[in-house]
View 1: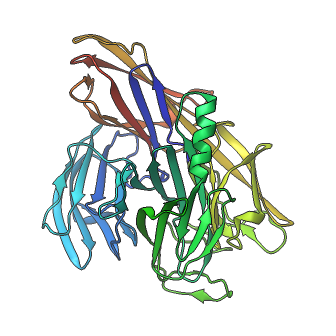
View 2: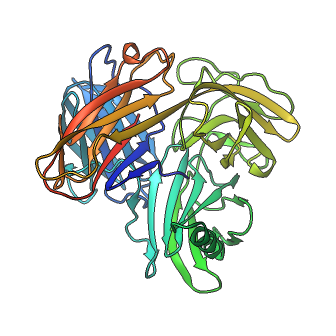
Length: 453
């Protein structure tokens, strides 16, 4: 999985994507603020966790998840009541959202109120309680379509993608992406071989990273994942919570009602209406469901809903005329890495065995650059934000900007911003641009994160 990191000189401009573009407040032409609700045990099991937001005593947004909660909401300026329920406990608190600002609160079930985070989390965070050995690290990100586990090793990084809609009783396909460290071609090749010497334990089965992505039967609500170097003891041990009940197809063809969805409800072929999907052209024993363009973000996972067999080995997806990487698959959808080509609208073809279907993909890319990188105390320069692939959008999109180096630079407009992109601000080519000055407080490297929602 690409981390979307732009590096030049001493600046590090990170680009993160939140794979959900619904507007939770009817903002019209007004700018909004960003509110993040994060769980204190991100990555650990929080069975039945839910987040509800109320404005003027009316529900604005409700979200339930069997995963650790990490929710980001665009909201109109105002005061809101937030109710978080997890592990049989309730946290009820009042928060204030201001237009153009991005605020993060932590939900700790051992406390009765929310705690404001100094900096929003946005993406990968350490997993409390995960077992790691020396020189190994593990982080997790909930990317809506997949649970992404980032395993750091002395020779590079291994990203494991587990489908977010995995359910007990299903066979699902997962994948591992190896990113070796090193500057020279020789070092990269050498370290890639070292990474492939590792083994992944997924559930009760062990897999060599010299093999292709594979499939695993989900036998329990907690999926145990381990990383071993050669035949040595495990370097990393981590658990991922999956759904225990859902309205989905089991491997034996039966259906389990009373959904407890991990993300959006699984599409019901033939249904129509708000939030549901309508099947498009398909042949054979599978179907793909899409209602209008599927929003995707360059380099990040995007889920294509439908009816599949859960086996990625016989599934291929092309965007335009080029193949896309399949990250994961379940009986209810396939997840691909959105390409870094074909920004804007394009046709995607999905093949499973001899059957095929088509959908439309809107692929969006976000880019950050700075006029100057080597700054002295008091120097001011400009950050350039460009978002491409937005041609034809009918609803606002949002960008969260977070300055991670507040002792080094200060960003004009605030160090945590939430920008609204109105359709009228997108030019004919589908591009949105914005320039923001920033000032150096002292010499040194700096990091600015950008999340597109």
